[in-house]
Length: 156
Length: 131
Image (tube, rainbow over all chains, first blue to last red; front, side):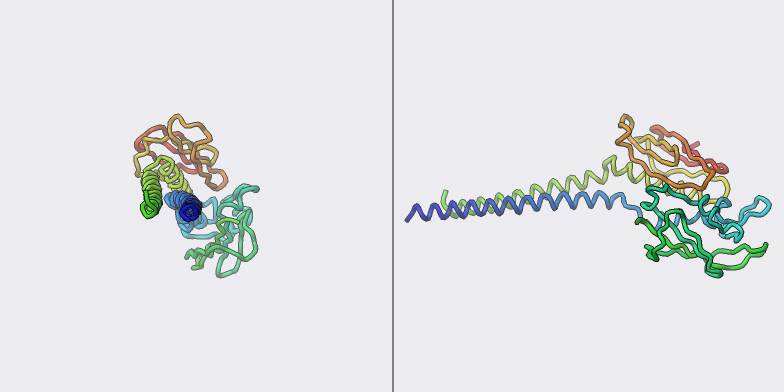
């Protein structure tokens, strides 16, 4: 009788240790996985901020669409004559093979509906978010109020 | 030892194991916050955003990175910013790519300087020690 009790206790001990080892292993993996996520969060930069900073160039630099007259650049403007695919490629262009892994943009002028896309923008109607910029549109030497809508794709 | 004592010991072991692992994880997490890898990643990302901002600003500009970066070296070449500790092999360098408009060049080296500056002159961006 006492031998059966002892055997039963040893069996319970073995089961306990098996369960304890499994639970501890899961706990250790979980802890280090959480640590990995924490490390990523420490270095995380808001992607909207990054895309806003890239988007500054569209209406502020003459190499993009900003209106320039007599060597003076007026920032916050879009020159309609410059709003072309060639200028877009000069302004912002990413690598052909990996460019889809970074920001890509579709620009739209609200008044005319004209659109331009960056070279790796995937035109499937799915954008991550939209940025709106109040701008002045330069058309035939005249400035008028308009809005530049920037559709952003972060990564495909 | 009797059965009850054995059971108490097993529970105690489990609790001690969990507490030890928790302590190690918390210590590691605290150390991560000050680790050089994390600081390198943050510096590289910050400089990339500064480069994008400089490109988006018309005219010439000079901007200082307001952090003591004397622990690191920086290289800006071929539109990539590299950040690394002195003596690190190239595969260990942290890097970030940025995409300036056509015609822009970006270059410069800063080694173990306290202050780092980015200067834009026309279409040239220079990474250098602050004046």
